[in-house]
Amino acid sequence: MAKKYDFHFISVEGNWDKNIHDERIECAANLLEADQSAFVIASGTYAPEPYSSFYNAPLGRYTAETLISKYKISPERIIPAYLFSFQFTYTIIDAYANSAFIGWLSCGLKRRENEINVLFEPCTSQFHGLRVEMLNARACNFMHDLHVNVELQCKNKLTREEMEKDHSGEIERLTAMKENGGLLSSGEWLDNGVKKSFGNIIEMSQLISKSFSKELCFPARGINIDEWSDIERLLLLMTFNFKSYSKQIDAAALSKIIESAQNRYNIQIPDSASKKLLSLLTE
Image (tube, rainbow, N blue to C red; front, side):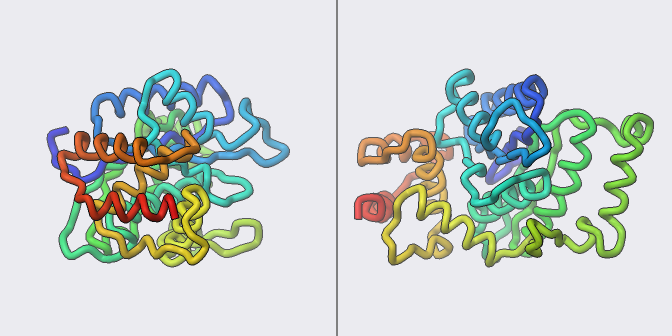
């Protein structure tokens, strides 16, 4: 990439048609191969009744399994957004989850002293692309105030002209979202009757902390992961990603994750960071 980005995120936006979803996974795999430092977010996307899906579980799980088994992507690079505690997920919640992980790794969901640049490439297709682009742009909007500059490059979406010609109904729905009080205007929506909003830093932090603590079996006393340094957050996320697939973390596995982080990001992880994490994993 010509421009220097501090972080590069890709997401696989779910589709309940297997052929379409597999094409999106392939798109992500190609991007991951081109940039070995990139992370991929395995979006949840779980279909409620009466919808049907080729995969009877959150699609993110299928995404992760396919990236690892077919494309040989290292599990520490795959962010398991499907582990978030939502009964069902759809494009709005997937955008919310994407922004939560991007925001947490980039700045700990706190204002940085120095600005950083992030590239975010959602892998989508067909008429779904414009919705994905608009929702994710709105979901990531709060990060500008935290000194995180997110450049969104939605992959394989139809042009506005193609949308207006062949999918006018979708254009009407998205236009309504932009009106006063609409989702793209207010950033708020209802999820099972509960008001949610993009950029709710407190809620996002709690959601991530809960997911990390559950998956990594942190002590019951709780861990304030929002106070961790940039390098500590990077190591924690890669460990979380790895654990979601392998189900086991020991000193040898952590050593491999550290080596991967150092090679991919050209950084040196201090012993204090690895010891801090290992002590929590074995406590």
